Length: 50
Image (cartoon, rainbow, N blue to C red; front, top):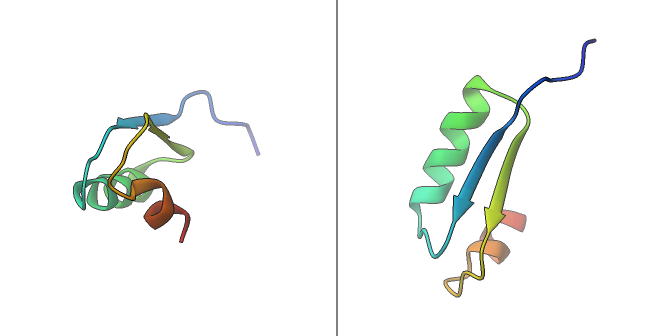
């Protein structure tokens, strides 16, 4: 299998529930998908890890 030549990078800061919808849509079409959480204080990190 050939390694990917591109990836999806989703930057976010306190995105709320929207990040889950965005990640799901990206994963349905592309892999890998990376989410960069820039100091969110709304629990985004914990919810994405769970």
